[in-house]
Image 1 (cartoon, rainbow, N blue to C red):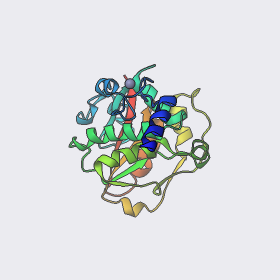
Image 2: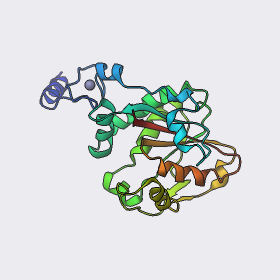
Image 3: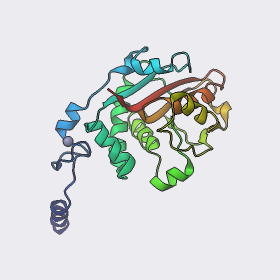
Image 4: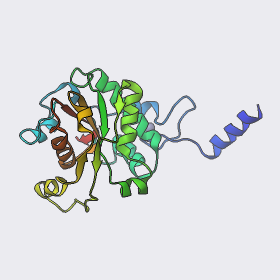
Length: 230
Ligand SMILES: [Zn+2]
């Protein structure tokens, strides 16, 4: 009784807020409010082999399937969630997004035979600053639904690339090419590997990751991001 009272007082002082809109959550709501959950802008790309996102990579890297589960718009719900995950140390926002991704991917014939989820690696220094790799949080959320393996030991980031915002796509890719290294590649032979990322913009990082993974014999590589521009 006393503990319940204390919990109530704490929740009055520090109410939990929706990670997508900032409104106070009702007691039965978790991480995001019911309204935001209902209105999340799904892309539907998971069942479309030639969706606009997949087309970014056509002729560059032979991914099996590419999707981002939600549209990202300025000041939108997904931007809010991703911001919480990347800059506010809100892991729950990432687990939530990951689980939503998992529910979508597990229903798609293009993705449901995935063996391994591999989060796009962060440079160790960046990961140390943030405290975690946001893509790994997403992968863990996905796996709460899909129950596959997550690997953070096969694909590693070797070089801390300088900020990319002023560079062209070609320059970004050139800059990225030697950034990643693959370890214990034989364990990935014949597997379907899912690269997990937060937001797809130019695709340069995923292209570099994809190219090195596709050197493994009989591997199938797909991409699932939480979001892309709408
Ligand atoms: Zn909300």
